[in-house]
Image (cartoon, rainbow, N blue to C red; front, side, top):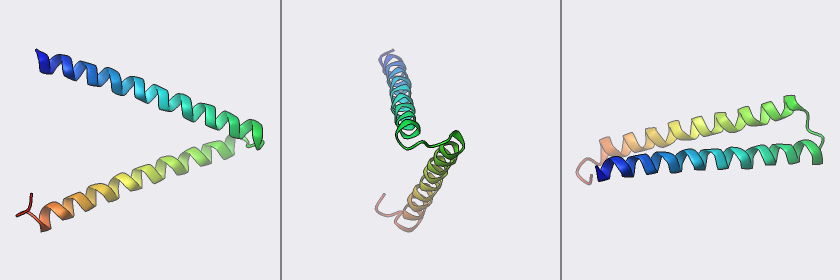
Length: 76
């Protein structure tokens, strides 16, 4: 039961954190739009580049972890 409650709390915390980061991102993009007259198309390109960089970073991280696991099995 304790593990179940811990899992629920972690899920709630991650959802709250996700909404907080989304709020920060929205405020940042709104600031870019007002301060630098960035159009919505440019914002979409910026967001797309950030998402693409995140996906590539996750793929590289997973590949490095897989390589480390295969080549250093005695250490792990």
